[in-house]
Length: 483
Image (cartoon, rainbow, N blue to C red; front, side, top):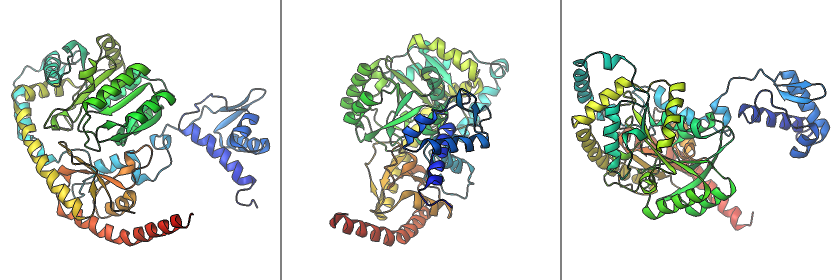
């Protein structure tokens, strides 16, 4: 029988290291494993331990031995699993799990942690009128494929809209997509190879982390401040990690609600130019802003920056229209990639969006949404403060609040308890690559107006608080004792 920490534990450690690298696709089928000597040196174990671990993995069929050549990853790999590509964390703080819960749970579940507006806030009747308008058109434009770059009339209108934010792009520099998610996916295919390094904000939109795992890239993060990325950490990351790409939200930032300042934007662009960094600026929340804030693409002139957006959050999750605005010399390659992977981006949805933008429906809808969000923000701020939570900042617009829990409480633990009572929360570490946001939660103010949310939260906080206070006091005593 092997003692804890003995030879058996060391063999398991070597096996788990290899399994993890294969699951993350750091090692792919046909790749040669490190030699026995190199693996032993890297993990600080004996060569006999590595030999035994490799032999057991051969028996499992995960790797194979080739006489005179060494050990290689088997061709019989299991299918790629996004959940296995990241760090081992609890499902309640795994990005894919949170997304699935948001979509799978029924209407009887309250969803202050989800990332979209309530159905009742959407312009259902206006969309019906738009569909009736389309129904009176000849069928051919609605049932046929669209042009590769997307509906020309809509691209012309979108070019005018983003020009209002200071971004000068001709219709020829725009390509339509199904969503901003598809836009980022295409751009990652266009710009990156597996193993490249990508920089994200910490915290950042959690589905972005899952997508980047699927692209099998290395993800690094930079702390986000109320004014934008932490500039000192940003520069250090560029020097040490050499990322190829930086992906960020334009204001209002998700999940913090922060707004990029001009000073920070100019410094980010100077650093990007010095280090050959390309930036994807996701402007999906632009129409939630009451006062326009700086856009990197406007200051940069679409040289280092690619600007993307969509209407899924503001109009309809089913009207799938997004766009990419990029350098003119990149458009042909992007269009070819789109045709190879998606072929068409939804011509019918593009026609419907053109109708709703052109007749003023969308503008009136968003004016009403911004008013409702301002009221919902004030109400949610009051509710979370009553429970002892502290907003990180009071956003100037948008639908998200980034809120710190009372001292000693863990957001994932609270989320686990809340889902049992049909309240879906978004704990902070879902958004944090560094896993340093365990005491934060993101609240969608539009989905946070039901009193029952705070009744459930209040009960859980009261249950958790005595243990949290004890833990905090014990930790303080240990600190005072020099432990």
